[in-house]
Image (cartoon, rainbow, N blue to C red):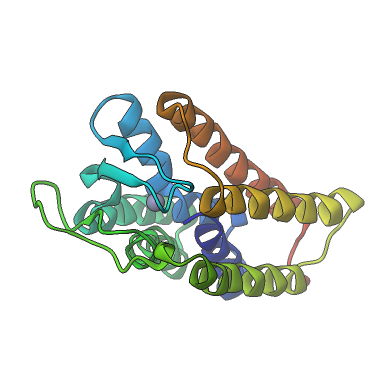
Length: 219
Ligand SMILES: [Zn+2]
């Protein structure tokens, strides 16, 4: 899932306007950022066994217990919430940040084929496999994305043209990247893919921070 996670950040801003959109998107994408890092250092593994016409129709072997297991995502959620509380002293904000980190597991559990573990060391993996159906993915993840974009754009006001156009350009870039993910061919070079993914996720977080400055919530 991609835009579904960013949608959590956009929706979270509506719930707690005092938290930066950058913090919310960082929390919602934390598992994927950690995943890129753990792949690079060899702690986790993804392998395309049989390449199909799209990534969803390919046979993918993935071992992601440290970035994507329920137990570890609970741990990452606590780390993020504690860090947020230390800096901002807001229990409500810390709770929302923890919820955003944990939402990643729930959304990936709904969308992935069975590859979501409960804890490191446990072999059983879970997933409802929304991704098996392109129309269902478009309806559920795309629908959530659309609602979150509309909610966020209505809850905030662009201070400058950059805040207005930068937001919509980001939405278009994210939507096309997501479309490439769900409907495009699987990546040929997985080593290059994890580096570009890490850069892409970091840019999405940077965009969210920037938009937060340029699109304040009206008092
Ligand atoms: Zn993920």
